[in-house]
Image (cartoon, rainbow, N blue to C red; front, top):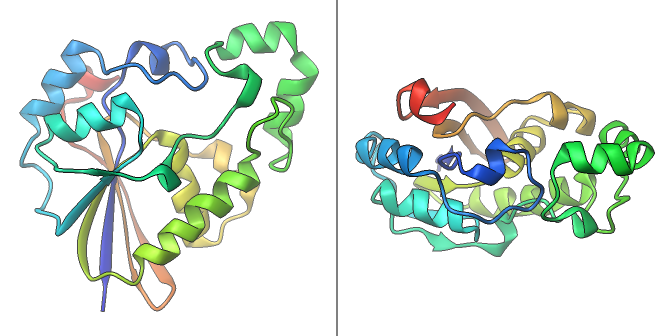
Length: 194
């Protein structure tokens, strides 16, 4: 029994564009329009899930996916950094940011470490491996990166080296604990989501 999990990165919003930690804002209108235009571009899934953020929920709606919210696929919890931009935190806490980016076990913000995120998303991906058919998962870029790192057994430090563009699809297919990766393909024109 093979499962295909199509991870869809959400349409871009102001917070994502500004690299604002933990931003739960909606997608920009142009990005939402691009998602609506891409409705039907995905192969029809047997089931759809979404990270619980507003951005992911609205992207799923725009794509015509009746996605169930799944807290296990939530964005990385950045604790005290939530609502601040990377530039703001780097200016105020340069050593903390450097440690966080260099050590997957570090959580100077008091939230989750990258290792914690990898474990949480990896456990959920392992559960999804027991299903058959296609699944669509609208998930924050960090969740998509964590799923790829887990599925391919990559070193945790690779997490920061993966780029997930808005409205791109990263597909993992597998059975019996073995995953294959189909690298990201765009649902919408690059100009709408960049």
